[in-house]
Length: 128
Ligand code: MN
Image (cartoon, rainbow, N blue to C red; front, side, top):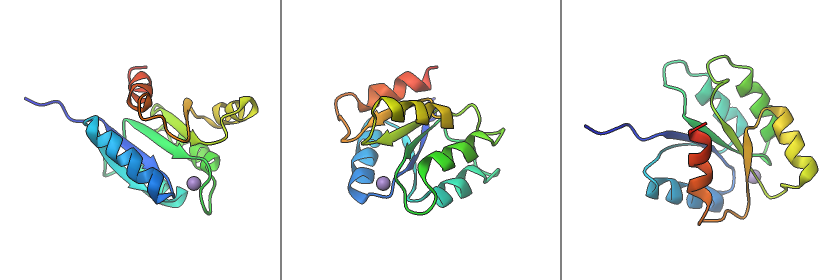
């Protein structure tokens, strides 16, 4: 019997970053669902037919709706409230971290992504 791979929703508009994240998550045995905009992410999380992801990685700088607005929308959805969201950001400075947490993020991963610590960061939030 196999245990279902945890499902990660990745919201990222940059192809290079998305490819790297996809590669690392697949190596780690995760199932990945990709969205390249906030609008696309919301259509995925609002689809009550498909099971909620186990964790969400959210780029903050997105075309159209910005990442923190998307986080607020997702966290206002009762079905998604308990799903951890990690911000993906190149601007993880002290003030920004507060803004992310206030918007409903559970933590953040700094870009450029550190390939050595990426999977353990995700595991840490999945266990909470
Ligand atoms: Mn971006």
